[in-house]
Image (tube, rainbow, N blue to C red; front, side, top):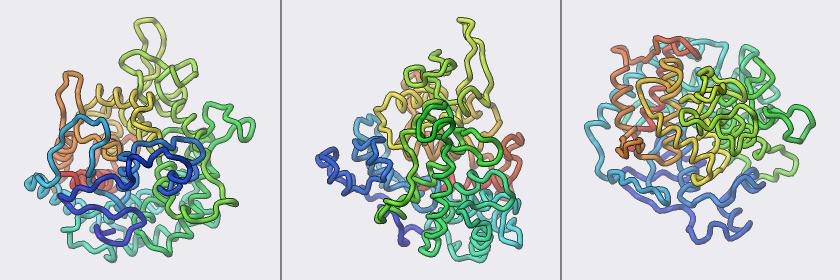
Length: 448
């Protein structure tokens, strides 16, 4: 989608234009009538959190961060944010040009490496093609690459060919929720009315995939409320839960004006239960394993009782599951999509962990494993959260966008692609990694 094209989301400000919050601050919290007037989702009305700060609501409506629908810059600081970002009108033109050039090279490489059947990399997993399509939809407005290019048409034709009668989107019958959720984001980014029936059915498929073990309707299992792969194993995990919440969040405008009496909605309180069950925060996570030691407190693991970063022995002799970077950004994003406020102790705790472990040299706790997914998730999370700077332990403030942009520019290959030398989580696939990098740069570009 081009900036300025019809969008299901609020119109985006032009570069340098500063707009106030969409809803008057004095009206927030006045009651159901006011909350309804700002189009809160059923999950929000059902008691997740209705008292989100108006600037938070503004951001979350304005910036649908994975899709090209709203790969844009933040235009109003959050209440209580003491950072002093450079005014948007004072743009870093040199950096903009460098980032735009890197994006253009990446998209040119993707165009050259599309299969003649419309997919990228593999026909088995439409999620990879969907990520490439999201990258194309988020191109800077200065880019002459049209959204109706042959590559994009063929990509969407392939994607639609993977749609199943039950609403799921896949080709090879595995990783059903992963493929469905990521494919939904590409369909949302296209902003085409003819995709609405596909998206509505896909929403219901994801909602129906929410885990509910033991007694139905009761949150009585640590995995209840989350979402898993849908085929690899029965339990939920942070990665698939994030992707499902993201797809549901950014497609919710499709059901905002409908009578939902007969439609299922996600059990949002149960989703929050699962998210906090993956966080090293004993005050909220009542399992036996959460640790409040300084190295891990507030961070996230992959699923309850399992960290991809392994375990560590604490000085007390206790065994702890190590928090790690990509899971912690996934946790932050999931809390945002579940409508928790920045002041919520769970959000504060994960942000503290992320500040204390900020680095671009590695995926904290994982080294080079999944580092491009880490960059990608970091960019989404910090953009949606509204962090223009990261304040380190010593009080210094880091312009994370500029640092990450330079990092990605330096990692781009001569042919315009990116690839991780470590193959964990498919990151030796240059299509996947190039899509991650381009989408990240597109989000950064609009804030420079």
